[in-house]
Length: 326
Image 1 (cartoon, one colour):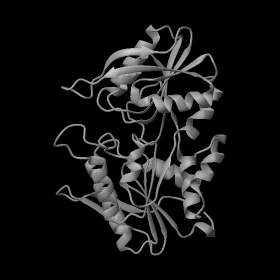
Image 2 (cartoon, helix red, strand yellow; image 1 turned 90 degrees about the vertical axis):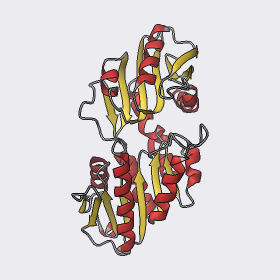
Image 3 (tube, helix red, strand yellow; image 1 turned 120 degrees about the vertical axis):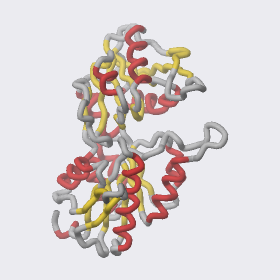
Image 4 (cartoon, one colour; image 1 turned 60 degrees about the vertical axis):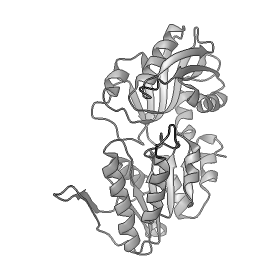
């Protein structure tokens, strides 16, 4: 890595092993050794096997599944680094857990995303790096620095290279919550926008029913855009509706492909030609053939380099992909 980075250490929990390795390789180093396992009574066991005294420590963790275990791994790694006198501790959380629960939707519910933030700070972390939050307001849950990396620098060049730009492509928001990101992407690619408006029934908030579609899709290539996939039904149903509206083909783009339960099978057998996603979530063992992963490792590596050198991350992002991060 070179003398300038001798005082940096990268560790990972079990949720981001390959991504941490890819980022370390991009920086010309390797992931530091640690034990991240369980005792026989199911308690999490953590031990850092390398000296971190006075070092800039980056702890990677993401949350595709086993979320409670992964959170305990992260908090205990933070505590271990703090008690070993790390100079600065940064948690790299590509997919922020509980981000759908950022406010109270009904009476007697917790604000789970806020509690995760409070407990992470209480564990002793100094800084957070995350990517494409479900709600940007989550940044306000932290009273420490948080670098919120956007998804656009990762995807823009890919879409341009594959011809998904200009007047022949329509960017589609599969629900009202995705309108802002669809509009931003359409602006950068010179496309028009369509929106599918849905209603979530009270008895099952994970289901969605279409109310109305707005936008012209006849004879166009469609690109559905959202921040994550859980069960997959929203984006799969949207793809069917888009094709029925006259689109010549439908692709999709999500930053976080969590794909719980039957989602891989749903995506694989859907109308979606290609689902573009990132490695914020490790690829599923049964990931369908129509999923294309674009790595965020180069972006994260440069973000870590900037933080370690006390340079502006926003300035860095304005140079990646030729787009402004501000």
